[in-house]
Image (cartoon, rainbow, N blue to C red):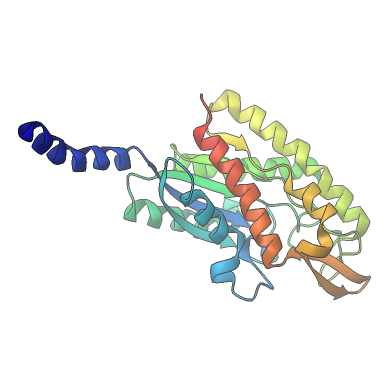
Length: 259
């Protein structure tokens, strides 16, 4: 019995280590605009959606450490992230290369939410971006990143709702919101395309946050004064946490669903 107990005690650390080794380690680069960046939040380093999503994922079963880089930048469109423009794309690539170098065994994942600024009537680079052009731009970005990181996974989130009064430095308004809604079918088409080209690598992410913010804009979005009156565009602290959970659930589903 003593020998058995001794062997059990010796084996326990190995079993615990084996259980830990089964957990998934992640390198995530978040691509987006001011919403991803966490603009207007009091402490974006701790409150921005990517930070909260990362913490949410680390709390889930089967997930070990999650290493992240927030590449959300205010005002950015899909045009700004095109490789040919050599503005944001190199930063995204460098971010993932750095994470990969530091954590070579971690699974690589790009979490993408773009479209808000594309939908504007005027202001942001390339706006207004038509639905077909949005598809093309997203495809170019994904294709180039797949070439650089062939094993990477992509999770494409539906851009969230903003009020039809939105008009700050850029003009959005009701027509911009209507244009924004045309991007969602393009994301669905992209996922269908890549399901044939590279199965299991490009997925539709969150699709529920947009309707959530439309229903809860008074509690989850920041009221801002613009040229067409008060508008709602950026999540507050509560909204950032809500968005982070929507993203986290979508990413976790992709990572754990049976192939």
